[in-house]
Length: 205
Image 1 (cartoon, rainbow, N blue to C red):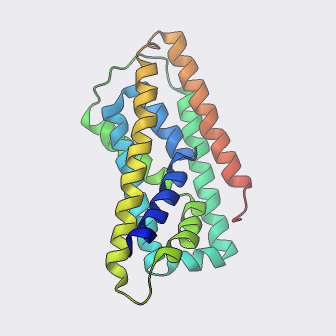
Image 2: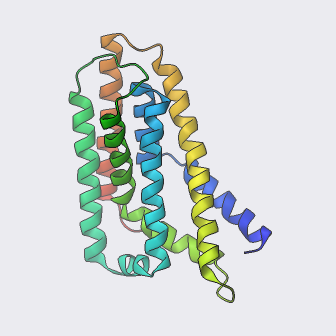
Image 3: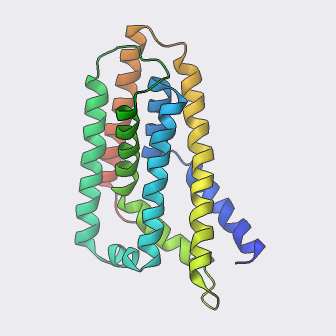
């Protein structure tokens, strides 16, 4: 992969990362509620799913998902349902102030939330399936190129999601009164439900 090709992909990765989506909502809600250290667990979960997406595309399953209406529809409904469930749980969460420290079981739970939020989004797989092959040179070894692609996507996404989480955490420091915590829960719960509804109603295009 040439430097010019990599720079072009880096620009595309930045645009993808900064575009608001379920991952950004999860990063912000976790950062505001629990602080950045806890949000980092969710962000790393997002990256684990992103690596899985790249692996799926690398072995050719992404093309199968892109071509199959049934597979795409089932995964889309699963992803939409999970986002709506997260939204309902967030909406109903008690308005209890929680400091920035998070117990290990909670961090593990946040990591899995990040994995499931990204992994259950078929549009992400289809988008990567359409984007990544354009930057792969078929005349040279493809495995190192996919490693570069995956590292670039994850590094870019970690930086952007961290910025979302840190900004939300800073705002969250001023919002520890129960009525404000309740408002946080309602706002982010509504955003998760909205994201799930949009995913459920969307097409592959």
